[in-house]
Length: 252
Image 1 (cartoon, rainbow, N blue to C red):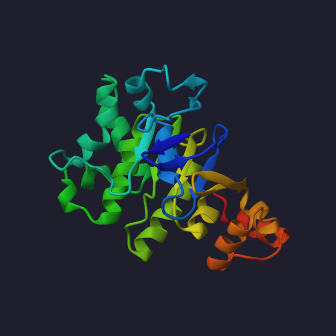
Image 2 (cartoon, rainbow, N blue to C red):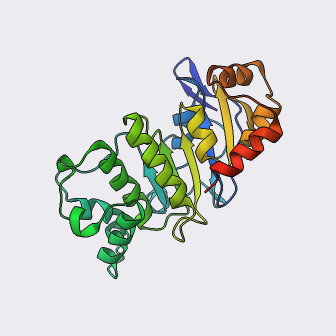
Image 3 (cartoon, rainbow, N blue to C red):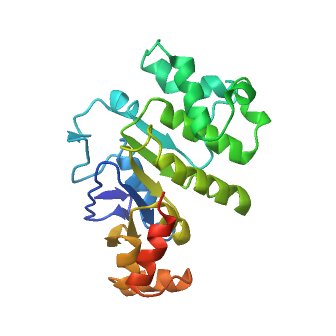
């Protein structure tokens, strides 16, 4: 439960996310997606109920230490403008005082998101395109090998071509050695993006969980009228078996 004044942002919502799984949080504005996402790193503290990350109750956990083990990518990237690309990527590594291999691990993260360190390491955020800034933000989140990656509409502000390119890169990323066991939570308003990138989709409405399931499960058996409406608006349909084929083809 989470309330802001008279507005209930989260209401009796329960969601389990398995290790290595990518779950997309979808729903209209005000449905509670970002509030739920930020509950996983303690940026939002629930008024009632518990949030567990790796069996740690966030109500009693050391949130500073916990956040250094969680990758977080906001919609605008959140890069520090007075730091070079390389230093931005190495931020968490430096905070964790991991002195060995800092530059090497930062360069590895840049390569994973498709940026050549020899070209981009010494550039400034203002010298990058929107898509490049988001790649750097994802690299920063990955550099410290987090167990959990939180993405808050990371591709929402980009043009269609750049967005599609980053979506493809994210699918490749999830199959990489660095990210294979990493759990992901992705907030998106785009149901097609959720179907493309996530193993399961959690549909939120007015702070509650309407339905959670694989893309094939949502298409084959929409649990509520609201879920059916979302699928119809997105022009997503077909039988469960048909969508199973689509989901397999879209998988990394």
